Image (cartoon, rainbow, N blue to C red; front, top):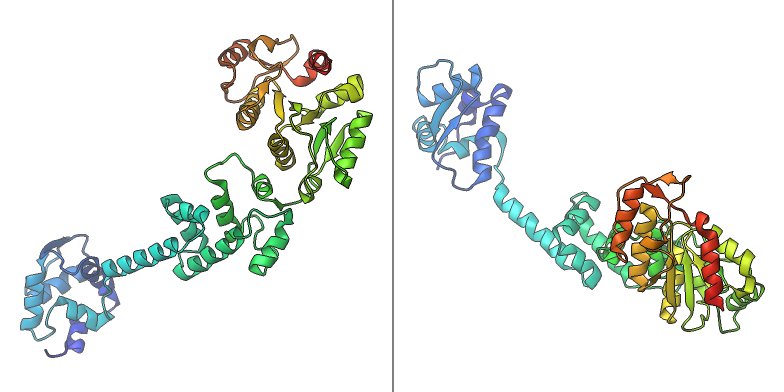
Length: 402
């Protein structure tokens, strides 16, 4: 098999002017080992049309498209002693043609190996899903080796979870050698959170970390409580007991709740409100006689979630009240469902809009505990916030205390 005549080939179909034509022809071989024989090339310019006509011995005239065949092209090149076939001619001019189908198959197998290397069931579950595989590819910049490193690093972090009140920076330093490797937006942090979330998109990152005993800004946004009952003698428990004896509200930080969990008295009935003003008014009115209370301060963030989880483990039963607006109903749905709670003065009959309330805003939300509530709120079109119901709520707390 003689070598292609590079000099003559270059005069016939070489050079920069015909580079686009050669790329189009090369693509046919790259797409398949056996391209179909007949094909049409469209959108040809004058130089491309002349080159193909000259190669095939056709009349040189401008053709915007030409019907070609591999058999004809191979024969013309062989008959002119230019090359054995079209592929040999193209490789002589521009180098070997990669088998992209085989390359894609190799890449797919490599990604499969990376996704299958996860042994932690939480991460393995993520990487069996197309969305999880796509996330890994994006985080790794579509680099298979980088992805394999990410999977290994993520598994090292997951092996330490749940932790025991460990700071996120300490976890990152101990498991990855970089105190900032688990900061928001870092690739390993993103994969770890996806593995821990188990499809629950309601958890914010700080709350998700807290659910695993990992502290992020452990002194931010504490939870307000009143008269929670404890049994124990450690410093945190004594602090809670002293505040309850005085009937004074107390802020509990995520640090206090997780460094050493307070010894919560089993089986408490705990009244949970959305706004801290309700808790403060109850302390003013009832002091140490008020039943145990917790305020979410507008959302079930890391500290209140951790506290309610601990109380639930101790057998507490929760009574929940929130604002009669759509965000309030959304929070109520989550709290009542998560903790099997009971609505507290929070039904359709308790919704009594006044003359000076604010209009309801946002997307309507069905109250899962009362099918009539959302319809009644929509009909009235007014929000009723907890602060306007203080007298009724405190009267109910007083009855519960007695």
